[in-house]
Image (tube, rainbow, N blue to C red; front, side, top):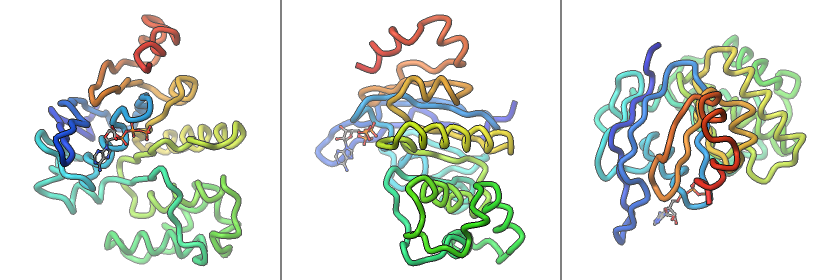
Length: 235
Ligand code: ATP
């Protein structure tokens, strides 16, 4: 097993002194899917933002593929794809150009074959000439993922990818995650739903009040605790 992401004693205090992350330590193996379960305000988005270097850590460190996110931001960031909670896409841009532009932002060479590959991976090839605003909500989420994968990152973060989406779209998202895993992408996703973690993760972590309360292989966790006890941790 190869560790692709290493988080050591990560702390984040916001202005005013509120401690949103209270010393998280965690290693992620290449190719695994980790689901981080946590209620509102647990610190999930803060954790992702700090790992990705969008927010600076108060202390501790994060390395991605051996690159420290604070010391060597550009190299570390190139290894990360981020799908934020909010759908933030340029509505009048075509699907293909959205992905192409994102690839360019990371200094990747223009490579139409690669863009085709990414669009096909997300079943967006037929929509490549459509403006983003013409797409359904589900398709827009696919574009967000394609955009995040445009520069061929090693690790993909999905921040509550199914928050506020209907059951059908949720299942669709689970399928996409399973497909990406088959293609060797390492995935860390946050969620409020135990069912979601159970459906797609290899490992499940529970985060609350800025602390990682537990992290276990899914089968072990379900055998040891079961859903009811996990729910207690999420309360
Ligand atoms: P949700 O599931 O609601 O998205 P979350 O688990 O992602 O929640 P965060 O958004 O990381 O939680 O927030 C963790 C805590 O940090 C919350 O108490 C929140 O109010 C606080 N917080 C987040 N951003 C800031 C900020 N910029 N300044 C001060 N406090 C913040």
